[in-house]
Image 1 (spheres, rainbow, N blue to C red):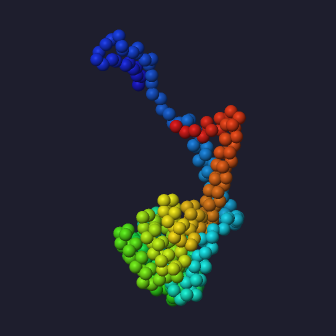
Image 2 (tube, rainbow, N blue to C red):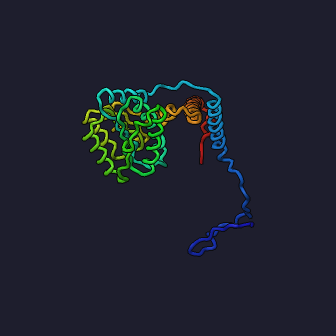
Image 3 (cartoon, rainbow, N blue to C red):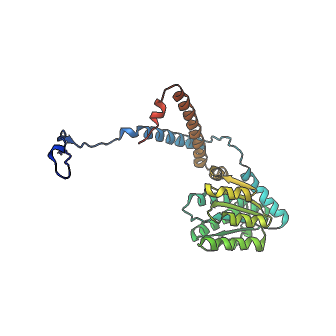
Amino acid sequence: MTYEYQLVASPADAALDSDVSRPARAAANFFDWSKLNVLIVTGIFFALLFGYIRLAERGARWVFRKIPGLDAIEEAVGRATEMGKGVLYVPGVQDIDDIQTIASMILLGRVARVAAKYETALNVPTNSPGVYTVAEEVVKSAYSDVGRRDAYRSDQVRYVTSEQFAYVAAVNGMMLRERPAANLLLGAFFAESLLLAETGHAVGAIQIAGTANVHQMPFFVVACDYTLIGEEYFAASALLSNDPRLLGSLKASDMVKVLMIIVIVLGCLLATFGHTWLGDFFATQ
């Protein structure tokens, strides 16, 4: 359809009315060319992602930076073994559909294998039926992987409650009663982070924490011995799983960061000399 427009004054005053516009017709726009830069950047990202995953599936391996908190997991379990005490693993307060909880289950498998190998008591309190079900299978499989299936006890993984602070109170009670030698706080944490970390510090446990919630990291940093900060938490799960898809994704994300740094530095240099075309390319509406 063809449209014509005119601005009419209110109250009515013909002298103030605008001229009638030229005829205008709406046309189908199948592609927004102003978003071409988004398409190009997204295409580069996915090309790197699938390319590195394919390389990982073909056997390629890369050297990643050492994560102290990840290396300290075996040390923490070993300390608990020497002291004759247990290990408390807290997988956060989110449900199993949260990505941080999924990463925590991967880390739990590693911890459970080390605990089974050293014959160390492992206690995993969970805050939802979904997390309980998955955590139980992960721990049971870990004991089977190291040939200690008979050592697995059904009460090692337990469902406590879905109420946030009731769950925290129960976990703190476990710390004070059982006094574990190692506390592993790995998952999504919110207001309860300092309550858990301070109680663990009070009982003298070595503590390894990890979360992607930026607003809770300072509490873990000051109260725990090791902290997996932000992306280190997800990188740790990828490194421990040795899954080609996760390793390829990790390498691709590192390369994207390198490219972003190069582009930012190059854009700053060009803008310094009056060339703004690179910055204009990345501008979005």
